[in-house]
Length: 269
Image (cartoon, rainbow, N blue to C red; front, side):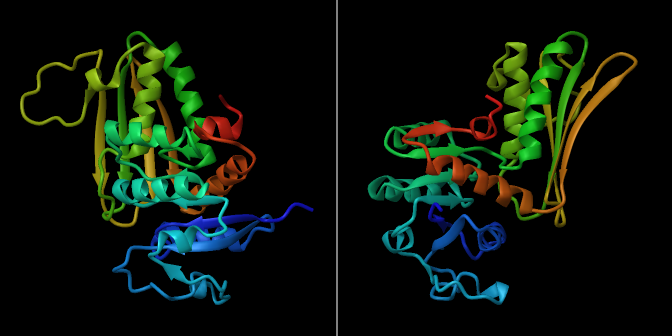
């Protein structure tokens, strides 16, 4: 029998970090080996899974070398600057990384690609298996509805989310734009106000909602004459992201260096 995959988790006292810790605790083929958080976190020094009522013996730490010791894969849903620091440490210690962080600049993405020349990195704006199946459906729909349909992307998240539009919404836009032979950076419209004039049919619009505890809702609207097609995904629990992240970790555990996405993990590429 293969030994369990040693998993380290960044942002371990946050909502997503705790969901990941719980997911690891409930698997037979993965084990928590490290738990990272920022130095100012009040959780530093505490047992990472104490909130579950079953201590893991892994203390939350801000020391990257200590948190990554013995890990095969780090799972990171934090902030761009923190993730980049974690990736540098992963590269130094030979640890693969699953990145669910969003909001990277183009320069930061290039930095991630450079790290991927040395370690395995799976990066996706959304780890949900369902969302990534939706991405394939969007590619199919955009190719078929390439004339006479206006495309709008509407997303909603909780009040604490700091980036907009969401990384998932932007990825949906990229998938649609690529299928239509467009460049999203040139055709995206991120806000409308006042007298905007008639809609440019070559654009892809984005609308953002922030409020309450919405986990994540995304809808891509193809609006034609006499009909509209809506492809939606609604999350009711972060557990879907955690389970997708573990699938990605299992994938990376048997891979060498390279930059992968969820299509690679799910065999949809």
